[in-house]
View: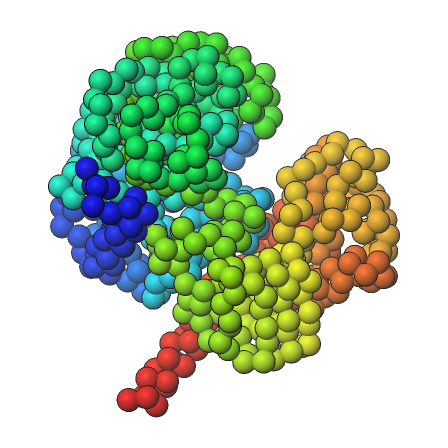
Length: 599
């Protein structure tokens, strides 16, 4: 048993560091056949996102930040209705068939879903969730490199097929030194992590077939009777998904992402990524070819996995409680997928010493990068990663986090805040629990606690412009209302949105919102000024925040205003990448000079 000689936390950290070292050795080098993925594919929501992803992949390959000799692709969803990550999976299969014909039946493929607009973590909206920066590595790791590192052992123990994962989660695990996770069975194979019942209500939960092994092991291969998608606690009990440690020493169980299982007499096994063999992928592709156009959102987990295993029933296809938008075709499409996949096996790789982390919201992002000592320890996250800045005191475990940024020695950043890809001048003070991304603050400025600020370069009528989105980190950008009379229920920085509009001297009209006029939200509210320089853009948006905070007037009526939705249409990806590169080169030069001075 891997955990016998050391605590689960120590073995998890050691296993994670080994994978990171192995990936680091492969960066910038051609890989041998079977040593790494044949294909790494990333999904994108639209053509603007596709271009952004291709440019960033190209930069990474040029700078030798990724293994070479691998086919890296970006597959864009077809224009029209949102098709969900299940629809994106089907679309990616068609792209593979077009590119490789029958050849892809011998490939190991990693498919990363990164097609959303990241409305709950908007600093990832412009350049993508899979390119979210993490505070370690030189050059800085982004989620893409971390995913490739954590899955480093998979391709060499995997039959041809596709591993499906999402861009905003992290799976860490420890198993015996001579053991490997194998994806070599027909049908589907999913990873399973012990979690509290509360966590199970927001994930997929496995109902496993009975298992007679009395000895606790870090790695177990199990068969799944059926899969439940975001079930209630009552349903988990009713359908025998709940496990009890029994005679197994509870200290062997890793803590879940929110609750310590050591304190919980009951737990469930929740999902993360899954593999499907080539035969299953071909079956799904043939189905996609037969339906022509997909007009509803399909969930790769809820709609594919719930059809699997001997205990699967058609009942879930009519449950639309977890669906963002109920389309008339959805139930019919789900039933067709159920009948297509019914009888296909679902194998489960149980990882008893594992962690699943989600970093898809501002709260999760701030917590894991500044406060969460577990993830910091396991991944080796740093408070200061590849940056120039004054010494920032550590206090009570809750620190600030600075990623590839240049801070003047006289500026200050409070604990719990993250600054990435930014320059802050001498008289800048950042309050606690803020996110500052892609910004340039040269003048005297106070960023209020719990502020979110992210600057974008824009190309408008052939001219380079800038706009900075600014919110409270707890604002719900996705929350929407159907009519103008209801926008009083929206909140900006904790204040009624109607009151904010008064403060900014803006009229409540349909013109205030971009896009769908029956779906009004902070996401499509035209409230962010367009400016000629990056620093002016940040300063102006800061004035907006201060006006709301102090209930003082700041008129926006003379500015050209954009919504976040529109910023993503006008975004100038090349300029944003250039800005990051300038910061990178300045830090590199500064370090070389420091090394010369100390040698």
